[in-house]
Length: 115
Length: 114
Image (cartoon, rainbow over all chains, first blue to last red; front, side, top):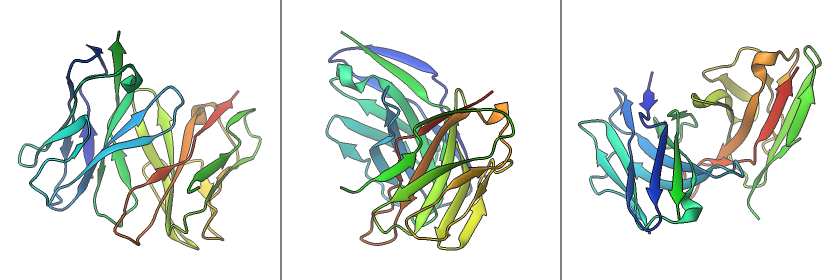
């Protein structure tokens, strides 16, 4: 069974600064998919970024980028130029295959962006 | 607009009173899932369905039932709710076409069992 661990329950950052959220996972699979989801106070789950394990290049989406270290089973999220609207709970998630509808989530990291 | 809808959004009930939370998607997705979210535990999968009449247990299926009689609907049934089922519930769907495997989440249902 896969496990996902987020070791930072809470983090804070000043507006316009950069913050990195950590995620580690454990799996025996070789091909898999990793995600970061954002959950603002509205509770809606919003996909931030995804990474396919077979791709060596780290994914980026505007101010969001990941550092994917397959051998270390690490998948951190970097948020640049933090904005107040980035305040949310962030979840790291693992999926075994593209067409295998089972996400395994980490515990979550509550990020607060301070003005 | 492509979306996953859940009803009700909020529900307070008493122990033992059967309830159903509905989930519907308009994206013609094959896959649908139910998750529960609890503080410090993240989201955990309850049940999933890979097509009509095909369902399987997730990580925490005890106390729940599901059915998939139509492609668009995937209701979650609590036949005898207990206080430990107080949680935030999410329905999600995903498809197999167009190369997109992203799971789309509904808005969540906050359930309180007293």
